[in-house]
Image (cartoon, rainbow, N blue to C red; front, side, top):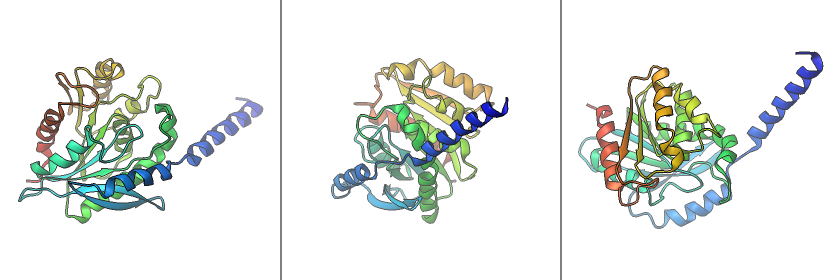
Length: 262
């Protein structure tokens, strides 16, 4: 590479780096979501966490059992919030009946019309939020933690898991991983670096990009040497598991049971 081309290349990379770090969540939208959620919570309680100098909402729900199984961090999908009625709310509300403390996090969001690929520059804001939740659960005495994501939340969760070195995080569950895998290959890139057990769960009527990528995801996990990669298809479930939330919770609870505190 000659000097002139090298300078142009370095300038281009620097520009990408600056753009990447200037992108931020729509904090005004996060506040609007929080204002709508907090006063109407029926299960769980608002827990304000802090990451990168900003407060963000988590919804913490204690286990309803005598013994604590562990902790589950729930990450929602594209542009929504931690009490979304589909997938997120059932998981965060029902897993406590199986002994798990849960905390569902407000993840970085953009305007309603934002496309999936526009979220990529926000991924740098994911690890600080998840780490804040991990610290919170540890303060409650939880020693083993599972990360569960839905849709875009799965891609964000996988990104965190690819970087994670905290041994208290025992496993990762991806629900309906979509995210235009061919367009934004972050999920596959992340999956190749995850060494802990992974559950890939989806519906038989899920989005086309979810269904067509199942074999590719399994191949990536196998190539990475992850012998604890499982796929479960829930018959009749769509991307949001409408009418199938009980089955979703049942399958997730059964799979993560192996990581429960003894």
